[in-house]
Image (tube, rainbow, N blue to C red):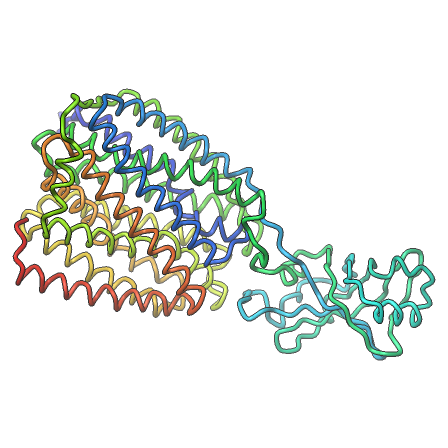
Length: 548
């Protein structure tokens, strides 16, 4: 008989939970920023949104950690969070896009009448070249125009076109021949073959005196509408009910995820008992689930999308719902150690803040969160922009992004999670922290010089250090500094500082920099910051000689 590996039934449920839970949330979380972009939010708005969400997670994690250290309700909170996570994440499928303006300049002159669509400085579409409409036949494209109130425009159109119904002049229909489109600098010029105002049709319309007006348009051609649609909502999104629906669902989903992420780690440590060095060997199943599901999610999005510009995210919502239901069944069978009503939990936790080596660790977790935030919130956005700017792989960009997360998890994090205990034992927690900062510096610099999104794939192997080893260090060090009966609280604080303070600051700062300087410069600035912080941490470790 061949050798068959023995299955550890004691740790099997937590392994299955790690795999199924991360598989269920991976497609939603890894594409969350680009989903927000698809809904019409700007990089700065996304920065503010995710800053709020991560602050929410920062508040929830230590608060719930303190509660479960004090009261025996850990399993109840854990299971309730899984249910809320599944319902709210799936409900995002029903959130509509925010209304974006579709405007064009209607110009009537003695030579011809045209519709002019000009791109803003922030609009860079890969289709926007001279061959954009080359595949279209010489068939007319019809458009409906709703123009602004302008008396001189009304008077000239009425006189030049012999229109008697003045009330209909601001609402007119036109026909275009799209493949004789001209391009003048940042503007596309579409000649009008005829116009229709009420019952009056004018062939090859012209005006005796040139006039123009700004009009909202609705055309039968998708590419033309893509050009005319503003890329950002220019009003106050907080006045839109769609924004508050989105924020409510994201708050419930993010808050419940924060509880699950925090307490699944402490449940794992409870199961391991005094063998906490094996934490990474169990935790790597989160990377297996996240990586494989992200890759599948990217393939599903590209397969069911009929445009390189607009993506259909519907399949990943159903994919996540199926997996979260399976995870609930598995998690229900987890053995959870409940609190035994310890005393002075809050007082014991406060004591650790008087130790400088603990404070320096917490500062490191904040820096870790800021760097991680750039990857979570802006890497996919950066790859989208790169594909549009350099016209590489736009039709399959979601597959590339899915493979990016797949390599991050399977190629990088899995081996480093598995061997994290051995690495920490060999070089120590502090040197591991320095190594993480240097790896981030290299990773961000390589992003900044990319021109083809395909080449992001080999860079993602560095995720083994920047996430796999980093998370193992964070949880392991938290256990080392935690006073008796305060593990949930200390882990909650560590993860709250990482996911709350660090990631929220990273989302905000990254959003401001990305909106101002673009993706390449933003990643380069973060690279320089990580290099500087890594050097400072090495100096502190060698000179300060922290206790742990």
